[in-house]
Image 1 (spheres, rainbow, N blue to C red):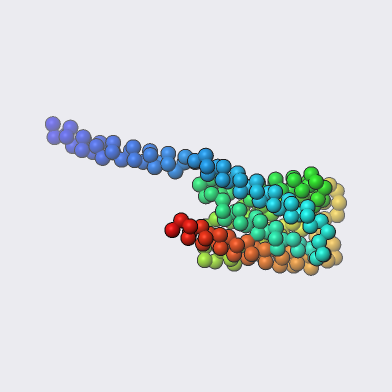
Image 2: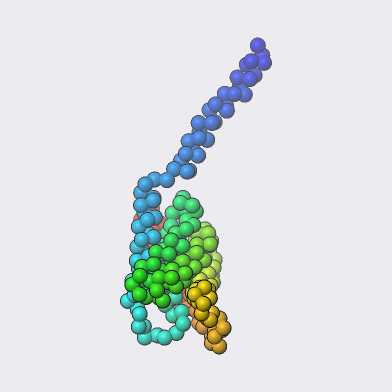
Length: 212
């Protein structure tokens, strides 16, 4: 008799705990339709913005390699920070943006055509994607975002080299001015990364004020 009562005592807390655990698990893994919709809007909006920027600045006044990274890199970093972390930790958002924007501008005859544009911008998006959102939101986010923005913009050069090798041309990194090009691309990307992080911080502060 005592044994049966003891077993009941052991089972009763477990019976009460299991529904709570199941409810929390369902709550964590369930994604509201409005969350998916918001994420889709972010990806679509920034894909079009990047493509339109590149299309509208086909003949810029500043003829320096990678100069457009000052404005293009922020358009990758901002959606990365705004992306919902419930959806795969926010991973995949900027890769998708790079793929879509590259396809849009490439199909309109900008950025070297579809093949080169897709390789370039998907690579930029993927590199931004590799950073956890929590890192960019941290106190040292500006420093990390700036360096990663520089590397991402610089990948534009190496992505072009890779594409040229695949289609049978001489890679860009064998050109005499390659080091200067890399330095300029990294510098413009660094500036773009800092701008992107700063703009995101301003948005997040205003969002917190609205919630409070």
